[in-house]
Amino acid sequence: MPVPLKRVLVFGANSALAQAALRELVTRGASVYCVGRDPARLQAVLADLRVRAGPQRVVAGEAADLLEIARHPALFAAAEARLGKLDAVLIAHGSLPDQVRCESSVDEALAAISVNAMSVVSLLTIAANVFEPRGRGVIVAISSIAGDRGRRRNYVYGAVKSLVSTFLQGLRLRLEPKGVRVINIKPGFVRTPMTAHLPSVGPLWADPPRVGAAIARAMERGRGVVYVPWFWYWIMLIVRHLPHFLFRRLRF
Ligand SMILES: NC(=O)c1ccc[n+]([C@@H]2O[C@H](COP(=O)([O-])OP(=O)(O)OC[C@H]3O[C@@H](n4cnc5c(N)ncnc54)[C@H](OP(=O)(O)O)[C@@H]3O)[C@@H](O)[C@H]2O)c1
Image 1 (tube, protein in one colour):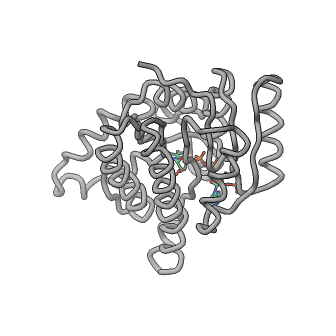
Image 2: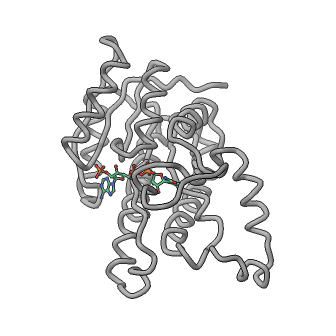
């Protein structure tokens, strides 16, 4: 049964994928509390959403660096103070680390793990403990197809997305019997600022609106794991099962 999404808290609201999802959510009637790191960009995101949402709904938010983990509980409290009891939380921030730099710098690798995994685990844990006693709620995080198998060209990013995916898998088993939905969005290649340095032509590349619509749909329907676009499910099924002697010959 579709879940009504009236009050949604979004972390990483300045990201291209979160913006696309936010547009879908406000168009479908949600009030939203947006947490973005860059204050100026956040104001622009809020202004755009207010135009789309109309006067009936609340569009609010605040700037925060999500590496400041001690601030996380206060961000949930601020969202509920503004919107009322939340229906859903979407976690959509992240960074694409430079794999070569990570190979020679432990600090670089650990920084990627902090932003993509540790801050996400903190937010997921708080969201779980907010929703579990209420027996309802939707928790969504964006991981990636990169987490499905380690590749030589991006195994640090792949490893953090894999951590998030495994965490969500277990969290879903814990919370589903309590009435809380836990959703893992696994996009393929999407044209966003994060991938702007890559050649982004070809049928495997998607644009943010497609992913945003898929996120909003998944939140309403409560599907557990969603590959976006759908064909990545089949590609990654093959990639996961390729034997090592074949996989190592692939140049990616
Ligand atoms: N693009 C793809 O092909 C692709 C594929 C699979 C998964 N994903 C995942 O989708 C999510 C969104 O990425 P995107 O493609 O939309 O990239 P994006 O537009 O570059 O957005 C990344 C966002 O992360 C935010 N961020 C980074 N570090 C932060 C921190 N410490 N605290 C708070 N916010 C922080 C940035 O905030 P500010 O702008 O405020 O600095 C930025 O808006 C990420 O988790 C990414 O890994 C993307």
